[in-house]
Length: 335
Image (cartoon, rainbow, N blue to C red; front, side):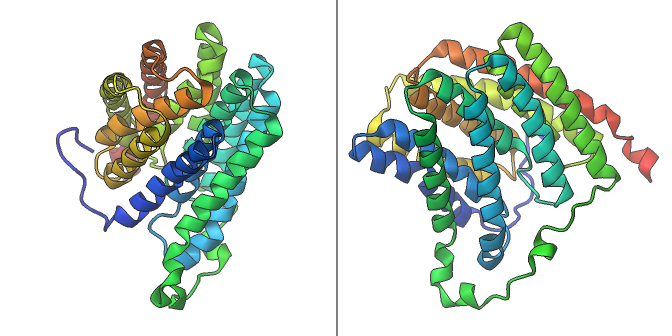
């Protein structure tokens, strides 16, 4: 995973990119038109549903994605329930990180792994604590977003050839629960960085611990290799720094309403096109997307102070995630 080269293509990504872009842009556009943009920003988080099992046939995704959506909704519900206490949110970050990692690795969910469950938990706790949206309304909006994204992901079934594909049994799609040696090491790494990330967050700012942990979990990914951890850590740090600069430039445009929906859709489309080929470049788009979406949901869009905090949090988390890779034996020792 070089900083100066793209990984080989794994097939066309544009169908998944379009689905992800629609999943994030349409709820914002529709709810903005209806005079409830804040609910659109919340529903847009449901777009994370379509990021899973992206290479699987649609008939197989139809069986897997409901479990993903249920996990995202459960993570959000826990975040909302604990939002009144920074200490409880910190504990919840560890619980969600370890729990979602155990399920992701144990059932071979595949990329992007436990990352978005942690982010949805943290974002939900943050938004619930800082916005006037009622908890039940928040969860209904997120659930609607997940349902819409699932519907978008299922649109290929309108084609006869997609419906004609033989669906695999669910036990083959999500085998488990079982953890082999590599999975156990990955789970141990997630547990370590979750605890350390939360402890560091308590020193810096408890409301930011989920971002530190999320950055570390993203570096860990699903690859059980020491070298991969170091490379992903470097990519995440550099990509986030550049992405924060892109966010600062975009805020000069004061995006809002339908323009913000379009901008977020474009960013999400770009992310899905490049994320499997160049992680740092993907983060150049991921960072402003998350900052814009979070800022819009909490009413502090355009805050350069938040961008600076995210850089610090990401560097800390990336270092934790990369350092945890030392738990894996060297490649030569495994052969």
